[in-house]
Image (cartoon, rainbow, N blue to C red; front, side, top):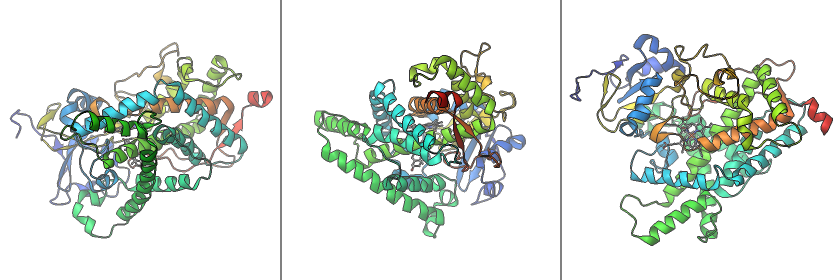
Length: 483
Ligand code: HEM
Ligand code: PLO
């Protein structure tokens, strides 16, 4: 062992010079499933080579917790890849930036700004409820039609983050919104795929379809971000902070005024832009994806939907809208959200971590610079921890009386953990709860007649995507009678 700890390295997949273990992974687009299945041959912790990069794959919660929590700092790095470097202008954002003082500062800023505007503030609840009301109106108008809910869900979620980041929102059919839908899909389809370009950076010099698509999409995104940024800079007056963009400008201003900026802590325009880009991108793609998964599972499990509605009828009734303060009253809805996040983790492989020093996981030594992939799919589908893991069963998150929600196993990390934990967990949970509560209070979601139930198979990428499907939103009888 090179670390002097006397520990051996994890077992490795066979590797060829240059391509590494690529041959074993090629032809398996569902990388999380492939890495999950390889456990049977190599054990829960194993290594492989992506070209010249040494990659360690973690499939058990014990090792995952060791990496993220116990040794969080030793594993807080991020790899640089061609696509994420393009997305984040060389790691000037939060998610794809390596560990360092500037990353820490950006995280703290966003954390403060989010708690200032959002979490726990009535203003944010009001914004989410405004969007929920608008979503319900759209569903009402499309009643009994076979509707693709995806664009409507996306617009609702986008408007929440848009209000938060830019103090603005989109109407139906807004061309800027349509452009955003398109570029964001292009980015999700191409970024951070362990595509050939990420493995062999030198392939960049060859024409590559994915890379061209990514560049085209980023151009549109950058224009949009730049425009918002310029508008904010011009309107910014220093005392009225309207949104996250203002908050970032404000912090930079006060940092510049008070003392000479500490070396290594200079926030350039690029840093502010990429930070907002992260919050906007993460804010839209993750939450929307979870909502789509939730709707899809409700179509497959009408009994779960009925139980949520019974709980709502009992605890809230029809005379008023659901509020955030109703969360303790609706444990079955909360449990359903937890189960959706378990069975279809949005970020099945998290974002790869990198070891910043020679260290270890369990009884194995890990060299500095190793990429560590946490397979959340494996963690959430571990048969030793979960009874029939592929079965959708919200009840597993409830106590015996069905009144309180708890995780029956520590093998559950939908938002990651430790110093790289998701920054948007509180916001995301507020949105998931309110959107689902508003919709299910009024509507029953069904699969359109004479159509088969849509597939539960996800499409692997930077988020685990849902295939397109249609839904019939039927106004509930009780609601029909009162309206
Ligand atoms: C990172 C999950 C929503 C912002 C992450 C990570 C996961 C995750 C698993 C990676 C942790 C790691 O690499 O160890 C989720 C889920 C969401 C969600 C399941 C929705 C249900 C959001 C929202 C925002 C957000 C709404 C924006 C406000 C971020 C950021 C990071 C991150 C900025 C990068 C943190 C870092 O690298 O330091 N999220 N997320 N997420 N998330 Fe979320
Ligand atoms: C989604 C597409 C956007 O256009 C750009 C973007 C920014 C931040 C990314 C996000 C995308 C995907 C989900 C990510 C998020 C940062 C944290 C989050 C990767 C690519 C997760 C789930 O880890």
